[in-house]
Amino acid sequence: MNNKPIEQLAQRYNQLEFLIPEIEKAADAIINSYNNGGKLLVCGNGGSAADADHIVGELMKSFERKRPLKQEIQKELGKIAGERGIYLAAHLQQGLSAISLNAHSALISAVANDIDAAVVFAQQVTGYGNSGDVIIGLSTSGNSQNVIDALLVAKAKGMVTIGFAGKTGGKMKEICDILINVPETRTAFVQELHLPVYHTICMMVENYFF
Image (cartoon, rainbow, N blue to C red; front, side):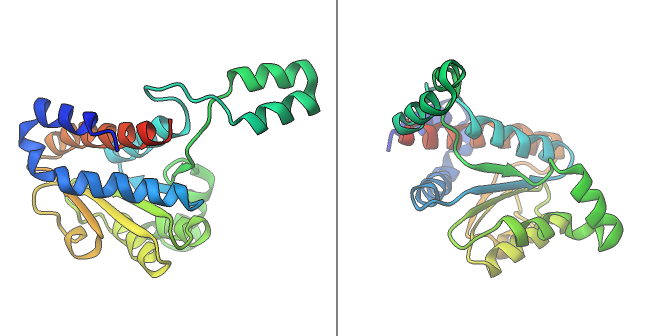
């Protein structure tokens, strides 16, 4: 694996250097899942919901590297759609399958109204999650119930669970296969350190595939 993103992270954020083994495990887990036809699910609340969407945005299209569509898809587009197919083949980018569980407002409101607001993410994991998939749960305290419930269902389904939390790890510490607990407790400061970590993971994954 290309370790340059890890080296850059250590240089720029030396307080995160102790987390390098867990960051590498997280990147490896996502890469292994993709290699086996899996996907990534991501969830969080508030600023962490924005981080969940951010992670998906870095994976589903080009982040720092060019991502041409696979040749067989390009050829098939040309066959079935002529000039428009050729345009699509030239302009679309190869995505890495990732879903933000925060993005489905109608489903979230239905679950909250009909079942329980605490299970808005867990309910989605029951539908999207498969053994071998990966889930990232983001919670600055490590205790957000809706994120914890999603991680519990993910574990029951044989998924790899990755938690992003603050210094103590909260309840995530007991649940997650991989815990990235940055050394801060104040919400804003925890989120500030989550961003360079997940950027690094996304770079490592992208570098592997492209």
